Image (cartoon, rainbow, N blue to C red):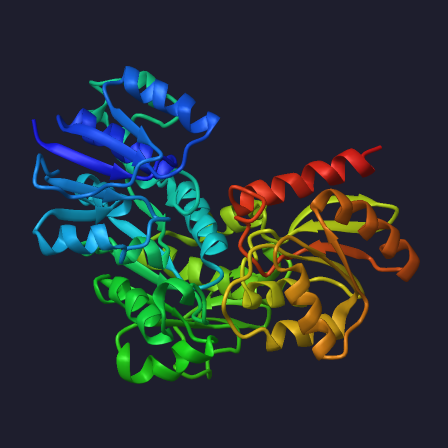
Length: 465
């Protein structure tokens, strides 16, 4: 049997390993970490005939080399062993690319961008599902892409009970949120519809330069049959008329925006060309940026031939996205809002702009490279106080001092931040407590979802009736 090696024992890596096993490969999964939860997963996969090596990093000796290496999204594409593997002609791909090989008979919508892609992906999936399509969301939202491949009817002959949560029917559309990490390792992925939501500096510790980051994103769009762009994003708009002349553009600024939009807002309605589709206020999510997300979702739906009725139904009933300006609880007139998905300065600035002021802000975590100027300006304009948590707390405190903002406290942990935020909100008559970290979560949490869940649980513990 052919030999495959999967790097990373997260959800994506596990799904990739199971898919390869079902397809007749001899599969080894490795993870450089070890923990009780990983050991439990190791035992489960061993029973399924998949070898798991914990505390292990792949090396390429002269022995039995793998014919295929599959990389989980969190594994850097330029680590030496992967460079060596590609130089030696070993087929080296990401988990998303593996899923594409088994799902490319179905059309894909691929959504990428620095910010906004999760909400846009969720909106698109909701609309397609309201239209009667089996169109699950995957990638950075919903299922791992390989989990969808596992659930296809022709894949259920082996171990179907492992995947009973997924409907066993042919997928009509794959709605995939695709990060730059996943694009980097997916050289063949070619969506029917590609969506680019925003572009601002992010992940530069991995991609090194803004140009590299742009090129990775652009690769996905260039392989997409139809392309949808946010015409209100300054960077994308600047390049639009020359680099993407055949793209479909969206704008909240009306039909006369540049580049000329195909989908836009006019008199409170989402318009496609000159046809009114759905009132903007049908979407219950706060923030002007979510109007742009709505436009891109409607654009994708119309390119797929979906009628107005399904679009209106989906948008009207859309509940929002967990961890992105998610309302948790109202206590004594104070709204507690979970924006844990805001893992960079731009996303956190958007979060601040979307809520009422004054706000008590909880920020911090594992800091990223980037320009914090607009975020700091938003803090000065809207925050009554800032509570700092995680590894970035001291550095953020210094930056706040440098811009003349002194109403901050270093509280270190979420458990201290939530009750202290409530006290300050009462003192300052602040209507909102906002967790919008502007940081990755990996200093104290497994993911931004884990961080947001902690915030939610602490709010319920402290303030539920």
